[in-house]
Amino acid sequence: MSERTATVASRVGLHARPAAIFAEAAGEFDLDITIAREGEPADEAMDAASILSLMSLGASHGDVVVLRADGDGADAALERLVQILETDHDAE
Image (cartoon, rainbow, N blue to C red; front, side):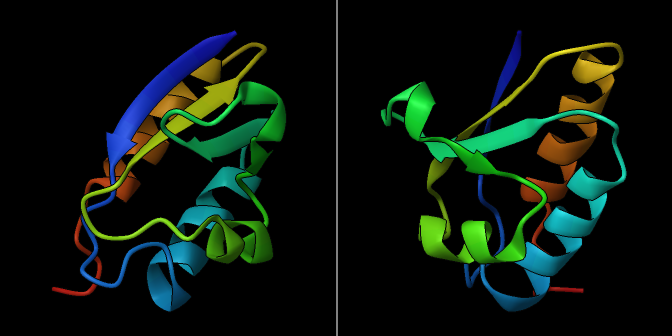
């Protein structure tokens, strides 16, 4: 199991546009990728490809989240997703 942490950079957190960008990217990988706020149990992690899960996560600007995936290409997938989370998509 691969795991990465990321700090949410978008000023509005994981809502609306940033959540849509992230969910679309997570769905492109043939992996089960989960996301949770740092400190939450791994078994309560949510589907990273679900925009509804992302919005219900309630991650705000500056919050740290944990991404987990297992399988071929998991490390590369998580690195790409960390880049997305650590980009302020509201500034673009």
